Length: 465
Image (cartoon, rainbow, N blue to C red; front, side):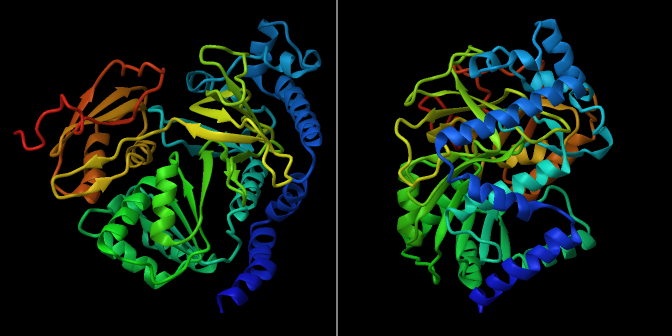
């Protein structure tokens, strides 16, 4: 039955919904990307360069911020004839985006933009705009990348994911249930996972019997470890697991494969661009979506020096299709390592050996709750005026939240934060909120969003009062 529905969904229901009802071009873009992935590397580089030149000309003509910055440097799109020339353009930071939000919008597309906010996994939530074509293309790239792991339209999929912040209305809940049912997907809220209810999550998976699991790494690893410790075996055989939102370490991959008896695929993405890179069937590296994005890996502190294969560099991304609010050479706060050898699958897309950064400490509670660090970026992206934040846990029963306030912050946000935290942790943990002028960075220049000091030798006793 599931195979028949998968065929019906892919061939009729999804085209009717996406192309007919929503009038989106996702399927056309997907066909384009499916073909482009098999081009030889030189052809993909040439395609990427053509798209980049077209975008640069648009930015100089339509986007006040880039026109002003490039004119100050005496650079025009006609001067960008090589990769070395492109590296002369300034980097774009989150601070630049906040300070020049309106000027980063294309003048002719201002009224057509949609908006999202990042979760602030580097401690700085960010709002940004994007066009409808950009959104459709990102969805197509996601389908292509997830397809390498066996995920297909209409295939039974379970998401162990973050739940919605706040309380959705009945209409929204009904729409979500209908959407998930049509797309053959079930969503389990990982933010509610505790030591005592891991069996409930395993039972929910058994009832749904997914063919594909898409999950935050930390909660699924926690569940897998519990399954192995208790001898619990899944009552289904998934085709694969797609790990997302956090770096996947090889020991975690081995543990997941042992617990669920299926292969695990690693992915890398961020909210600003959705899927940036993903593993193919060979799982020897993450293919960068170079026909959709331009990804650079730079030496820390440099604006133009690219790292060699095998060395870690700062991730810098240019979205080749968001013409509404273009991000040119955007520093997203992550670090990655380029692969030393190409993948043998035959795709011309370049590969990353691994992605570093965004390592968020999990929060623990006296009653055994394990809250993934992704919860706080997910929550605080909804709070206006939060420029930076950091959560530190020094005791099991207390969290310390430091907030750097900006324009738009309302004191009423604190009860909201406490209420949302109480939904997942109850009253077992107190939250201490402090407003600060700044939050120090780590030695590597990153801001750790969640910091657990419970396992440090110099940390206070977990039972200290």
